[in-house]
Length: 158
Image (cartoon, rainbow, N blue to C red; front, side, top):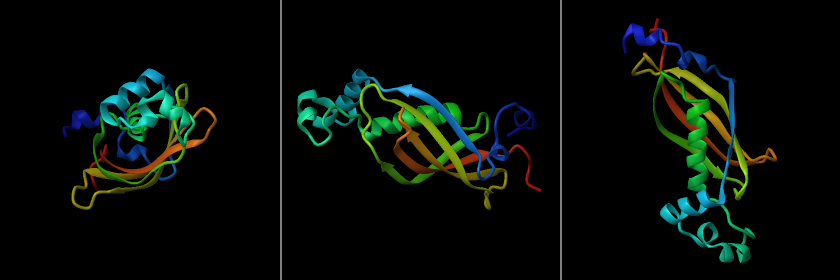
């Protein structure tokens, strides 16, 4: 990374101190989106068949958890991922789908930084672990996870 890139405005590892909270949304979940995603990626009856879903355990059509995750990624990219400081994610922990997501729900994001440290092997990078919660319009957490993010540092290691 060049010094010019480091001077570019935006967010970097240093902008993610422990306790920082980032939020964003809402994003609306449409029935056609639920059906389209599920038909392609998760064709279980509760996601693709309105009649079967009505008589199933959720009492109606619900979004695939993977669809909820894709919507979360859209919100995460818009409101949390550092630009231009983003590198990648080596993974996540504790993924939970806590409540069903239904047509018409409006989802919002809350990401709280749990830990932030310089990489031991690559000190020009930082490692941030956060708690990400996806909430519906009633404030109920529908999904949570703890992603690990690798980020460029604005300042060289001292």
